[in-house]
Image (tube, rainbow, N blue to C red; front, side):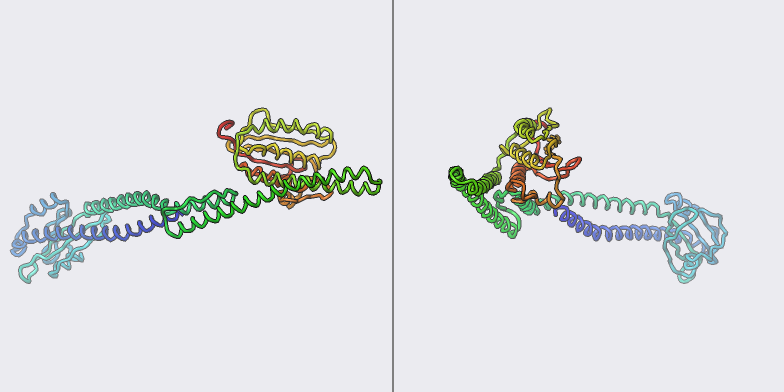
Length: 456
């Protein structure tokens, strides 16, 4: 928007400059040419007065005045008799018949004429003035004065150049002023846009009240601030309810499981099998409650800490190594030979790795391999957990990040593991995505912001 406003300001300024400067330059050019023409006409009148008596008496003309004029101004002077025969020509031999020249013919009829014509010989434009030498109504001859217009054209060209410089200077000043003005006008819009971007990322910080700008934008900012406060309050209440409900359910579920386990030992085998199935369902429900509690906590976490991604990965690989070995799966860690400092919420990386390992072990066959890779970047460090299981289709990869999605209902789990990992990654200002692993399988890719303190 700032750019569009600046372009509009410059466009209006340019139109105004063109409307002012082009007519001014045209008027200046016309005035200079008229001034030059008037001067040449005055000089031609003086020369005609000098030679009037000699032409009337038929005496030989003195070329001195004409030559001195040519030497002083560079103009060409031609004096002809009443038949159009040149008697004086400061550039060409005399006694030539010039009666066919339009300006000479017009002057011999007793009329003055002036104009501009292009000289192919000289390669320039010439201004000419021709007027009759007459006594009363009797025309004795004519005088034509021709002058190169290069000098006045140079003046006009310099004037155009000055106008162009002024235009560029005005446009430059207007660009600075327009940019400052556009920034001032769009500042409330930019702040509202930043607030909207924060909202889209889950940050419901209160929008700053605008003290400047149009009333409509100030009202919009106030409305967005109220909306953010209400949404934040609703989300806080929702998370608190989920956390409280999950926490309250854990105790009765644990008690119910203990009672069923005690009852199982006193029942016949057939009835004990049914109780065992109920205990399994209670265990699954307890796992679901625990995952819901973790998800609620993940949504509430907002404070990040500087952590060593490599050190945490080493620790979790060591922790899960025994379980992986028992399942016939090899856990490999790459890229952990140096610190990789990231900003993340406490416990987020550990839980993301735990959920990723748990899912990978469920789908890995005996003799399979799970590879954990750490890649460092200037702004983002990447953590990848890749298995060689059956993998997921493109549609399932998208759905797997949603809550309660389970690809295979026969596989144990609540469908919340990846959803919790996504929430933790986003709470750490990062992101999580699923991709195909090299050689087949699924890769969980987590990107976390590199810390400004270390490792950049």
